[in-house]
Structures are given as structure tokens and as C-alpha cells.
Image (cartoon, helix red, strand yellow):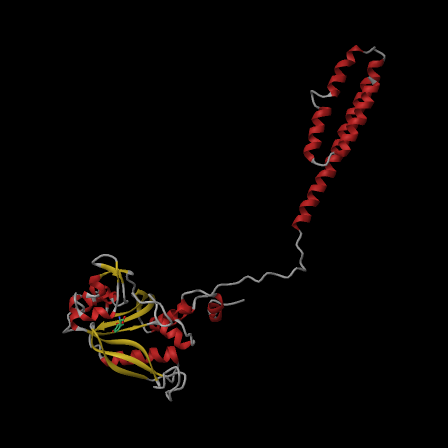
Length: 350
Ligand code: DAH
């Protein structure tokens, strides 16, 4: 039995020393000291020994048990420490490595231009009105004094969805929707309607099948052409510089009477004539006019009592002129080399 114990001890010690992880070590604890292990077996055999030998072997067996228990717990401490060190090592940060700069997105040039105009109008007491992009033919055309078969419908090639619905070709239908539900008890109408519009155009440097418009509408008592002119002058100066002058040319839109187109004095040459203004000194910016009485009446507004003006401007055109963008497609293809040139300071760069 003495030999058995010695052999057991040395075998176990070798295995414990060789254990490289906590799981193996625990298996060894079960193997050597567990209920079904060799120690239990040896203890069972004690009864067969003589009275003289029994206490000697008993205490020897206890020594072996204690020695193995200690060896296991020492090894456990070592392995646990190793595991912690391993973990710490894998988590260390090399502070000498160069940092990775987070890239922060900024709003798109077009968004910046739209927001600049929105801010300006909100500052003048306007509200923002919105309407659906999938619009009824009624609002897109009829309520704007463009009955079916009206020749001016040809000006705008439309994407029809059904006979009565289409992708809106202009933001003007929001005018009709706003007027229809307005109650003058709450004051006059003073809204701008920014949004996407769609036309069946072939995309090229100056055309896009989808683009943006900002519609303006003011209706109230005693609204005159002078109010329109004043408003458009403020718009031109805010967007293109204090020195800008405006020029109104007669034009035609079915929903306004009289209708005008607004030009601004060229911001590049100041009016002398250059490439930007094609030598004329003037740049065409928007369409506008006094709201046609038919349009007021169709939306349930008494045209003998109320009058108003409207205008429609294309933010793409404003952005392209202001920032010398030579192709409208740059605004839609999201080439970062382009978009990154227009980091807005508001959104901020680190
Ligand atoms: N809706 C017109 C277009 O898309 C632009 C326009 C012209 C809007 C005159 C207006 C306006 O409100 O009064 O061509």
C-alpha cells in the first residue's frame, strides 16, 4: 500500500504540474481526490491492514491527500493569474498608434440651400406647408386653373399613376390644398411649401426627372403686387447678396394673373455681362404672380375680398448658380468628392 500511495502521489503531481488550464486541473481533482478515485479505493482497503500498520498508513494517506489538495490549489492560483494576464494583454491599448478620425456627415448642398430659404421665410412669419408627392390630378392641375385638355398642361410632362393620380409636377398643388382648408379667422395665409417634384424629362446637365421646388403663397386682404415685389427683393438679396437688384418680366402661368418671371442682376459681373449671365447682366430665377381669382374661388376663397401672390423657385438652380455647379446630376449622384466640398459650418466639422 505504501508503494501504491507513493506511486499515486508522484503520478498525480506530474499531471497537476503539466495542467495548462483550469478545466484540466478540475478534472484531475475529480480523478485523484473524487469519490470514485484511487484515494477512496485505498481508504477502503485500510480495514484489511493490521492494527499496527493501519494508523501509519492512515496518516500517510492523509498526508498524500493534503499534499495533492495543496498542489492543486497552488496550481489553480497560478492558472488563474495566467488567465487574467492573458486577458489584460489582449485588452491593452497601444497609445502610440495614430488615431482614426471620425468622419462626420454634414447636410447636403441642396438641403443647405433649402434650409437657408426656409429660415429666411420663417423669419418673415411664414409657416411651412407640405403636400403629397403622389398627387391628385385635381390639385396638380384643375384647382390651379388648368382644366383637362388645357394646352398649358403640355408644359409639364407628367408621370401619371392612374387617370386621376400622378407624381406632382410642381409644388403649386400645395397652394390649393392650403387655401381649401384655411380659415381667415386665424389670419392671412403665409406659407412656403418645399418639396420634391417629378417631370418626364431626360436627365442631362440642366434637367432631372426629379428635382426640388419651393412654393410661396400669401393670401389676405389688400395683398398687392408691391408686396410681391418687396418679398422677391428680400429673397434675391438674402440668397445672392445685398447689392442684388431684381427685374420682373411679364410671363404666363395659368394660376397667376398677372404672371411674371424674376431676374436678378448677375452676382458674378454685377450686371456688366459675363458667362454666368450669358452676357445679359441678368439671371432668371423664378416664376411668380398674383393668384388668379379663379384659383382663389375654386379653393373657396372670396376673390372680391381677398387677394394674394405666389411664387415658385428651384433650389437646384439657386445652388448651381451660387456655387458654380455645372451639372444638376452632381446634386443627385452623391459623389463624395463633390458633396464634401460643401461642408456646412452649422453641422460642424471637428
Ligand atoms: N409651378 C411653376 C412651375 O413649376 C412655378 C411657379 C410659377 C409657381 C409661378 C408659382 C407661380 O407659384 O406663381 O413651373
